[in-house]
Amino acid sequence: MTRVFSGVQPSGDMHIGNYLGAFRQWVEDQHSSDAFYCIVDLHALTVDTDPEMLRSRTVDAAINLLAVGLDPQICTIFVQSHVPEHAQLSWLLECMASMGELRRMTQFKEKGAGRESVRVGLFTYPVLMTADILLYDAERVPVGDDQRQHLELARNLAIRFNNRYGDTFVVPAPSVPRVAARVMDLQDPTQKMSKSSISPTGTVAILDSADQIEKKVRRAVTDPGKEVVYDPVNKPGISNLLDILAAVTGKSNSELATEYHSYAQLKSDVAEALIELLRPIQQRHAQLSADPGEVLAILARGAERAQSIAAVTLERAANAMGLLPPKLI
Ligand code: ATP
Ligand code: LTN
Image (cartoon, rainbow, N blue to C red):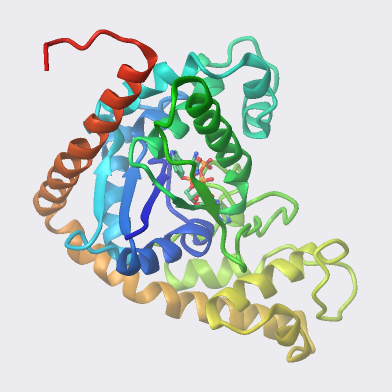
């Protein structure tokens, strides 16, 4: 079976971008692949976060993943810091990566914005992400469009390592959905919808009430003119709404455009489609939240399974690089 790996940061409320761009693929992949899904809490430390908040967001991320339909009987769900091999392999890979290639990462350029006070972890973030993936010999990594560049680095580091030290890592490939790979912010459709968005009204959270969804979609920034056409360059607001509706209904965005003659009708259907999509997820979220002990047990079993694989890969990489094994084998 193909090995699949992906990760999500416990950095805030999960939104429809995460769901349509990533989680929906994860749910599908668990049936056809040996899938590992990781809540990347070490990555969340790259920006200042309140410790209690990080802990509760980590548990909530797990509840969200179960609520969207991941089944711990058929896939592995775990927390990154529970498997110390992630940080250990990251160091080995840092010694393979160059300052120049990390400086070119657009996410670092955007979040770091050239500030001297920016955390070193934010700079080396993509190397830790590479370690996450390579530890599991993952062939496929289902992610949204924003992660393409990081995946390219992961591929390059795997190839460089194999060339220098002999075949050690599987070279992973990104898997980006055809629709909704980049859901845009409802208030600023030139920016991707993000957990860390400054405008909460631009983001539809998975747990938003029907009333909140309705309001946010109704107030979504639209474009000059009245015609509903799919044109991401000149009509980014309307095109984003069409993309969301296409992702939820399975119809094509340009076909949907011909069905609408007013922005208001389109918005009303987008809101309704989202409310229906999220309703069962929200119900499961409420049930799971009532039993956090069970969620923690799922994470403990997940970490155990993940570590049994990660430890073997780490040892392989350490040996290849010439580190002395701690005991005679
Ligand atoms: P942050 O705002 O903290 O950077 P995020 O909202 O971008 O967080 P992540 O945890 O970084 O979310 O990403 C989880 C998955 O969701 C990744 O595969 C990412 O590519 C995908 N994703 C995030 N935002 C979007 C979006 N707007 N459209 C499509 N996919 C997205
Ligand atoms: N960088 C990713 C989260 C992430 C990830 C990973 C995704 C960390 N490690 C490994 C796929 C595979 C993000 O910000 N969305």
